[in-house]
Image (cartoon, rainbow, N blue to C red; front, top):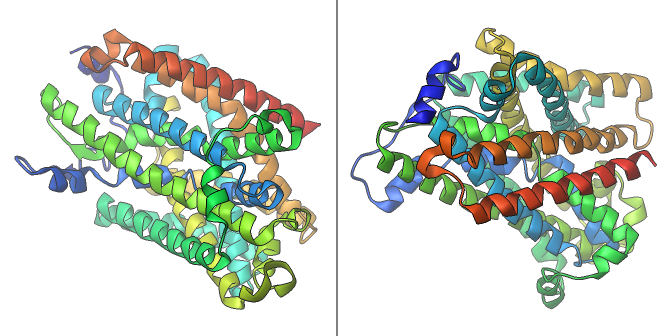
Length: 446
């Protein structure tokens, strides 16, 4: 098969230390197979509920109540389509998106694309580092700089988990996702939202397109949700399952269960993001101007003048716990993605610990500089998080366009090539996302 010939021309397997390490039972039933293939979707879903999403979603609810829930729905459906194509690319070609891009573009162009992608990963990691550091400050009173430095050692936890098996990493990620879900489900239940208006918020509305403030915030939600680094990550970790690469039926099975796993986990991310916006609408509507920082949200949850009788220090602590869980989850996936991109684009060969430590340092350095220069100045760290989204906007088309090209290539994908309707829809999505993100970049600098 064509993709096998191409694979032999690449230098090494994606994430070679965990590639094809998860055994798949033979002649097993549906549920046992689903369990065996489940896991990569959770690591991908983390990127759709990271700390970078929280501010925009809560602001969306605080400013416009439930009207922007439809934007979360559209973003989630887009994510399901893109992640399915990403997983399929990895399973069929045995190349992650970075390796495939390097193979088709050559060294010079791939180096430029690597720089752009590294900036996007750095921007993503900045949100995770800030989220974890702020959570440590809120929970334990650690100075922000100390919290940032502590996140460097997250990589050691990842290395330990890798030593005892990739399934342990997946299990930890799922556990932390359940913590986040439980916290926000509990807080939303206490807030008693108007459920009829909640469900109507999932219906499309022309008001979003004609209201500049709603449109801008919608772009922020989309930009914080559809992240380029997830496409690289999913195309790599979808290869962790050990299957017979010479058997088309085995490949079909792997693609099918990868899609189910991804859609289940991304549905969970959709629910969590919806809960975050619902919480912002039911508790903070009318107070949007005072909720620009994580610490503002933390304090608001125990302020009766804002959230009423349910205000409690317990709610604030639970919010900080969920923030820490989100930050820790995202640092795991961000470190793995950094390794995928570094190896795939430029074939940089370093010891495992050095590769992962390097990707963590790349993200920590700009946050450390910001904290040292601006200290505790109001909104300084959150502004860094905001402007980091610009790099994500730039890198998004760089990631989506190759993904659509490669998965629509009959010579590369063989019988697993995208159907025409899927390619056309994804090209339309890529065009719209590019235009919307260019608008977001312009408005950010304005």
